[in-house]
Length: 577
Image 1 (cartoon, rainbow, N blue to C red):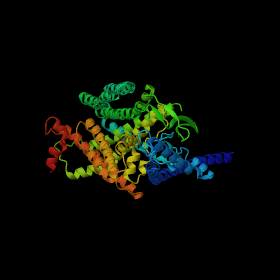
Image 2: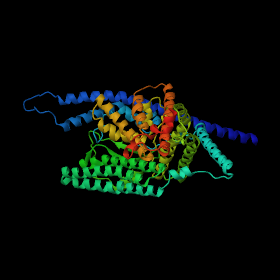
Image 3: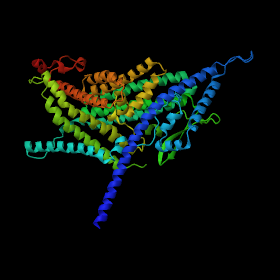
Image 4: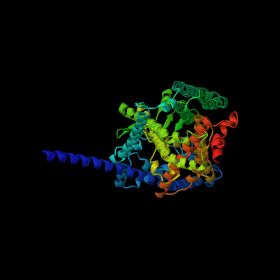
């Protein structure tokens, strides 16, 4: 009897290990497919673009046959012929594959992203005349898949064990000092203070961005046919005024009520999120009122392998699909768009929010143990030398890197997955495997896919209108400038002082490092080393300035004091010098 029990346990353990190995192989193979897709996109798109441009030039340069036929073909005729040629190229490319290869490709790439990369040119324009953006498919977050493997889950358990040790150390110190178990969480309570005002400010932003923006877009789309120029000018000006108010009013209330640190970060982050959502919603729906009759692709939703995916039905040259598009989307679509991120699994939601709470306590213990004791005396009578500054930077590297990982896991994984589960949003690719990046260019693309997709769609592609190399570099630098300025804006209003360390590191050194293109795995070591050292420098310098603002007298009065770093003029530094 015991023999059969042990044999059953061994078989179950074997099947569990086999399933984990299969999952790891599937993730690795999917990464290989993504790399192959990128390589094919670069090669095939350049070849097809060249061929299609040559074809269009040939059609436009048709020789004159007779005196009566002396006009060039109309642009509609040219567009139809180019569409026919594109369709024939795609059809010939797909039909040239063998049935076995097509079947294998379908099994390996069920989302058909690789098939689309091999059969179509990415220069085929969408409604804006530019390459289309991200294709949404049903998929879990990468860490959700990786944590199903026991080897990866052990790393998660290590971080939980470190949290337990930090909690135990805090309790032990309280017992030794006070003789009772009284967990000191005053810093957490202070950081999230005045939360009722945070809710009021958030509700104001939500109502204005939902009801106000939708009402304005609805009126503009229905009044535009009567007088396009006047209506466009009036509503365009009103929209710009609204965006300026959205950026000014929450920040002014934040300063007026003197909200603490975490509450300020919540207001500022939600302010930027509402701004991005509003801009994306209005920008994506302008074409409904400008071109209400759209001939081309139709988006239909269907069930595929049990998942909701968006399949695009192409209009063939023989059968054009004519769609009457409403001038303005429904309000329910706009309201859902503000929150998105198949029934709701409340157990998963509870686990995700618990992980967010755990990351908050993790950050609290790291600051209490490694940050506050080092810098709280800065600006007092005790001198602070340059050697101490260097030692402080390296001592902050461990804590700062853990804070960075906690912020990533809490916001980009747990928080977004919780709201994605509650809103039943199935595409949860909020990030990619940035930890495996071998270049800073790939790190920037995979660290935060939500922000990256927005910047790519509404900044980079809007500015990158042609194939000029200088235009491409200008668009790229504009993206980095906007991103770094917004990050520094959040830090400046949250800390109540302007200290552009992040702006210099992200918008300066980060841009230079992005142009280093390599696939060598050794560069991943350099990437991690620079990330850890950079976060240590950020934590050290911002902590010094934070305590200098509390311990050192101001050098200048008024607004200038907010712009000049007070830590540079503290008596502790001058005494050390």
